[in-house]
Structure formats: C-alpha cells, structure tokens
Length: 108
Image: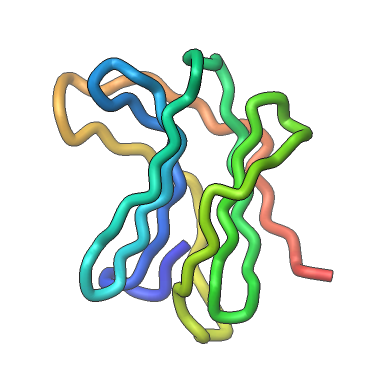
C-alpha cells in the first residue's frame, strides 16, 4: 500500500541468511522492519492487508485460512491509497514469483 513514494507499507515473504521470513516494512520518513522467521520454508504464504482507519493491519497464513497478525501500523489518513503486488531482488540474479488470487475488496 502506498500514499506516495515516501509513505508505503510492503508485506513480504523473503529469505534472510537462508531462512524464510514473513515481514512488513513501513516507510514514512524512515523505514522500519517487522519480521517473523518461519519454522520451515512453505511453498506458499498468504498475506492479507486490511485498512483500519489511518492504519494497516498485516496478517499472514501458511494454510490460507488461519491468519496471524504480523503488524498493525500507522500509514496515512488519506482517503485513497495505491495497492498492488510487487517483487524485488536487491541482491543476486533475481527469482521467479507468481501472484495468485490477488483481490481488493471494499471494507464492510
């Protein structure tokens, strides 16, 4: 989710020192990182982001059904945010990734 190039909150699955993690980075003036190492390297990680007023709740699941909150973070009171999937490889030769079931829903 993003309000501008200076305020964003990606949620990711990533490898750090050979261990798969699920994480959320919040960038406003500075970036910070919430990270949870996973006990094993699942083939699939589900991520869910839900707007809670000016905050965003980030949750993850390893089975697609049982979600655990990773973070609740202030993002922006802006009425409109940009949202969408992305991937990045800051080191190395890159990687293959697929996004499945991406959807945006209005809050009830």
